[in-house]
Length: 202
View (cartoon, rainbow, N blue to C red):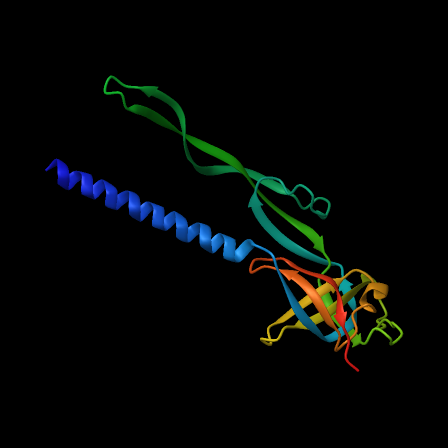
């Protein structure tokens, strides 16, 4: 009997060790950074212009709407039953904790608030050497224009796996020339960091 239990314990320990080894190996495979050559197949800027219109929306929720652009004189709150929660607990003679429940009431609030949904959008995408120009949209009453710019480089390795990498400026974008090969530090999680140019192709 003792020998049988001892074998079971050894088997359990062995299984736990194997599981830990698999988890560690998987974590190392995903997270350890590696270097690989990637070819730049595309680089471009995208300029986008959004037209937003000030619009009233109705909302209802538990609690007061802090941080929202509430329309004046529209906020109403009523005290309503929210649920039950433990309000007093004590240890009984049976060494088990016994709790009594209390009713909880909270503010249920209704209100109107302003939002700025996008009602029209225009965008333009072009190569780094092309002069950046913004799509034009004219704003009317209770409208506003918001502009965004994105600089993106698309890399591809020899296995034809593609990665999109964003940079912060047009000057930086011009460093990434299509058909150039770059050394990239990456892992199978989220790391993707171009380190330096290897060589270019004519």
